[in-house]
Image (cartoon, rainbow, N blue to C red):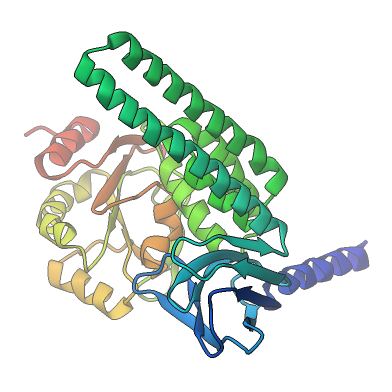
Length: 372
């Protein structure tokens, strides 16, 4: 039995290691309007400023080729055809992609070689069709308003809502067959998080379980956790992070006290402005069963420690993973902006959120039964 457990553990570690090994991929293509020696750029789509990772020259046969390794398990690339046309390519590693393009600003492009890109093309096609309909309805709507044709206005609104629901339904139907792929992540861009969060959340949990090291997935999972958040009445999830002296400090170690979880950072102006109020409240209630658990979203340890000293934050529970907005605790608690606070009762349940200054003081008077 012991040997079996060792073998299983070894196989698991090998599997995880294999997932993180960079995989080679090839992007080749041709564009009929390009000329020999025109320059083609491989860029990471959506970055500001734009990140160029490679370049190639068009050959005498009008073809170009990129051979690289995918190190992040999934990247949305943009092939820039001599600055005339840009083609999106989804890469997870191992693909041999072929692009057939016009090489003009509004030209067509076909990307072959992977299911990810097939799904991407399908989604973009659906979106373009929906967008064309929307533009037509906008024109008809404006004309109907001029004529004060309420019947026509109602018909357009109904048609738009029906088309929107149909589009969303088609996207949702595609997501399960995409699995934990880059195209599945892309598909969620067409879903309204306020309405379709159950679908987004289910996919995030699947990515977290099946592809925990994929960087694009980590961002997606973190965003889903932030949307999910923590509500009043929930039991506060455990947090265990290192202190300023690199010793792990758990939130649960303060159980039995009323605890303020305070998300802040040295670089956050509003946080630093609020700190004198936090210090004042701490000094008033620290001997009455109140404690503060400060979670920093810093990425520079020196700046974090200096801010603690300068602002006189004398309580001992200061923790951080120094991961900035990718802080695991911030994601779990749904923190989208700082300062952000969660007040816990003695049993570790959330009883209030984002109280500051006088509001926090009055709540602590109530909970700790302290008179003015």
